[in-house]
Image (tube, rainbow, N blue to C red; front, side):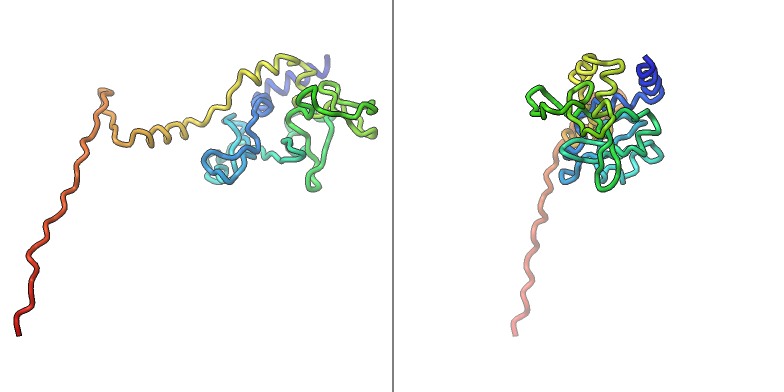
Length: 211
């Protein structure tokens, strides 16, 4: 009961936590910069994750942004960052390049995932095996949310949610599709006539005088 109230309180204060858990675009390639992976999340805008090039464009200047890290094909955030907004004491801590992290989404995605049967200490929700020395109850932020208040409801939220591209991007793409259409104040569409450029006739060539 105490844990449920704690989770409800932090989600009420920081609703972006649920949006971060729901997103499935972390470390996918960016639509605008195909060579870059999405590794930043804006807590103020709660838009889909974006890459470091988008981050440097100052579109989210002075916003609260969180950087995600990839480990074992999963996405994690540093404990120093996420611990400011929620209690992570019961979540298993991993290490990436010497930095402690917690995973955002549950590690065991399906019942087909192979796991060690002789391990007694597992995640309370998805059954992911822990080391014997670990005292954690959950393998990720998602599993803690599931156990506290969401349970199967989080599945419906994840399946029913779609990562919507930013409005600015949709606007720019629509402008690229209809470059010759202008809008009048009466909202009528007027197509500019295409005028072919006429070539200038060449003049009479000047010959040099006979010597």
